[in-house]
Length: 285
Image (cartoon, rainbow, N blue to C red; front, side):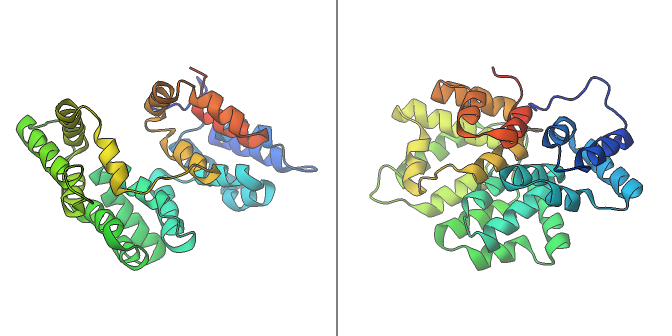
């Protein structure tokens, strides 16, 4: 569920383009005015604003934003301006070939549905002239490479139907491949995690907890390195999930850390960067 708050009557994209142009004029940029417009428009509206801006001022809005904004606010707003698939493609390219910090690529690939991944692969190829699989092949290694390639290339079911018996068998197989043995049988993990639907994996996790008294996550931590958080992660998660399921992420965050995501972001950020992220997160509850 999205956390994006839109005006009851959305202004015409032309009016938004004018507001942005006004914010850019004069000495320094009126960051608050930029946030008030862009943080409260959905992907379609943002695309129309970009078209109107180009038509009216013969200038690319993204380039203008790059000139006018700076620091973390610039990073967050520019990422926000892209459509979801285009944004994912940019995140993947950066993660795989520029920063080489694979947490971002892993998060995007493992949290998108099969149809989203299919679309993403097409966008990636048309934008960068190279297949996503080739970049994964070239810039990752070992079991990490195996699971990313499996996710990107294996057809998976997307529906809510679950076969309890298969879920219980998978839970058993993961137990044997993980906790029960010294080290981890990664092949079993790669196969089950990449071939099963999200609904099925939720059932596997439930069956695992029921049988062994603790969550499957503990085993997964044994098979994966711990990941820290930083501004790049914060921006990526909030910007990419705002229009999808950030409401659920907020609820899970509160349940897990006994603190709202809004309060956590407020205490870790400042200035217009903080204002932008909090506008996307929505009310503090």
